[in-house]
Image (cartoon, rainbow, N blue to C red):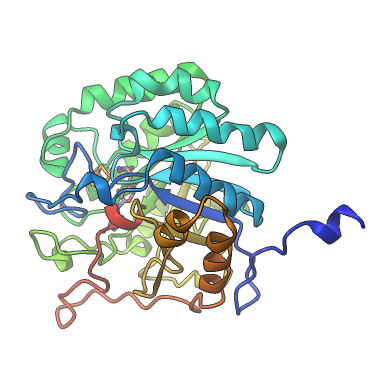
Length: 339
Ligand code: SAM
Ligand code: SF4
């Protein structure tokens, strides 16, 4: 029998999209409380609800066996999970074997200074760091407790370790909209791309999202008045659409779930830190993978649960932010499903 005949069938959803990208939230906890992401007094899950590091490893490895090529660890803040580096080092074996093409993470950068070199040593080559402002006071306000200098030290350490960084910035009306050009200049001067994100209506926060929402179409039009923006064919396997900026020599990505529906090419699914698989960030349908994981040491039940869930992956999401729809589109926070 040929090898191809015994390799497990890849994960293909009902709309013929191959699932090659998995995002795993390794914790719901975070050392920040960003105003658009969490409420001031978040109730975090009891630790026993979380998948153990061994269970996370089994879960990620099963997805890799089923054809996932890109794995992103996120949260909450992934680097606040104790011993996360053990998991990352262990998952690095799939990079060595060639089964996995990329192991990456999205982080707020607060713990990067400590972990940058270990991440590189484990095979991580690119990471996303979220920074919404370069003003230390504003940074503390947006994150409700973060220290910008600590994050910048983390960025410097990561660059020095050889990691490529993409900066993620959520565009917030009246908060950081004037700063976007300077964040782009700062990023590009360090060889980092910048991705701008629209706020998405996920989970209750302590404010009104209609006050925060800033359409990126407007941001892009303003940037085009300042700089020469050339549409770029560059893709990272995600939903961002890029332009290159002639004056800075860097790229700016626009992630526009609100103004442009990008679901048709969606190749991803997400797993929460409790092992719940969400087939779409903007829909409530989910599948529990923790029970099949814990039901036996064999991964058969887990693989069957994954396949069954992918057969239900919906066509797309339907986010709306307006005054009549002041409630979040889905009740869970971004920190639950992972950004
Ligand atoms: N703590 C890490 C961080 O901040 O990068 C990883 C998790 S965080 C949930 C991932 C990304 O989601 C961050 O870039 C964050 O800015 C973004 N995010 C959080 N809530 C969001 C929302 N409601 N709409 C859009 N982006 C959001
Ligand atoms: Fe934490 Fe990231 Fe959410 Fe900010 S965006 S509160 S850093 S999980």
